[in-house]
Every structure is written in C-alpha cells, then in structure tokens.
Length: 245
Image 1: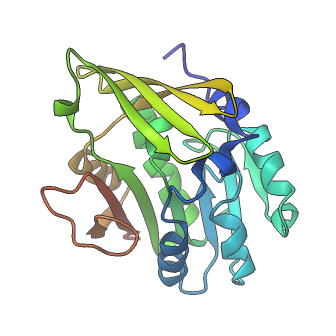
Image 2 (image 1 turned 180 degrees about the vertical axis):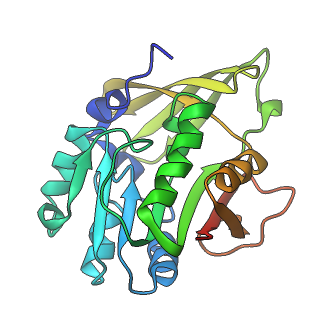
C-alpha cells in the first residue's frame, strides 16, 4: 500500500520508545523464553528496534543479530551497553538477508502486523525460514483482534496509564482488508505527541498457514511468554514454528 513506510514509525517514536513502554511489556519473561528456545544457538531478531530484547540476550552470552527498517531505533540500540557490538542490517525484514544458520528467529510485540499486506507477511515467514538451520525455530508474538471492540469500525481506547505519562489510541479498522490505522496520542509533562501507525492484522490460523507455506510447522502456542495455556479467551499469543528441512 502506498501509505506504508517501513521506517516512519521508528523515526517518530525512537527517542521516547523505551521510556514509553517501560513496565508495559513482558520483557523478562520473553528473555527467559527466548534463551530456552535458542538453546545456546545464534538468534536473529526481526524488528530489533532499540534492543529491548537483543541487548539483554547478548548480555546473557547469546550471539544476537538484528534487522530493522528504522536507523533511528537502531541508533538508540547502539547507545546501550553492548548494543554497538550487535550486528544489525537496516532494511525490510520481509526480504532482507542477514545471514543464515540461525537456531532461532524472533518477531516480537506484534511486529508481523507492521507489514503492509498478506503477501508481505507470507514473504516474511519465508524469509525467516531461509535464515534458520534445519530444525530451527521461529517465534512470533502477536495480539488477536476483537472486532467487537469497534463501533462502526472505530475505537478510542486507553493504551498506557502511569503517573508520568498517559497514552490513548484512536483506531480505524477495515475488516475487508484486515487493516487498522492507528494514532497513539501521548500526553507527558504538558506535551502532546502523535504516533501514527498502520497494522495489517492476521488471525492465528492465518499465520499457521503462512508457516506451512514456508516449510515450517507449529509446535507450540501459548497466551504469553510465561507459557500460560492458549484458550478461546486469549487475546494474545506467542507461537513457535519449526523449520522442517
């Protein structure tokens, strides 16, 4: 789609991304799970961003590489202890090549939905498989849309609420193309910032089919990084796929 720029979101939010999402995400549980899945092998993170996961993973002794479309986000990663030593390729993670023979490829925090359409998402799964050694794993963290949240395909909902910052998200959804166009409004210290982003959402079964097309099969699905069982009421999932050959 013409209004998609893979680096624009990171360019606009890089300087406050870490502070904004501090305490909001299951970072510690994600790191523990990724270490377990990697089993000492090399890890590639697609959408490495500011290194929320990659920097602590490297500090635990894992070989970590990354791909990201935003030089601004990667610049923040470079300023963190150990961040400058993590190899990162700037580019579209649905297509770019960052090496091979990885034990684990990671795509966290709904980043699969940052791709503009189904074709790009299918290409992303194929690209992940190309980076994996036979038997390697691809782990995807994503939310599950609940269209009942929307009135006339629009919703306004709270995102982050702390004593120092509040954010509200305005969302327009197109259920035909499975597109969400969002603007996060961040209020902090008397300032107002707007962070627009586009999302092409996909259902878990759709992601499973993308994996099958890429020569991978699903081996685990949990509600979260802590391994809570996935149920019909789950609104998020962490899914592990394995490359067959």
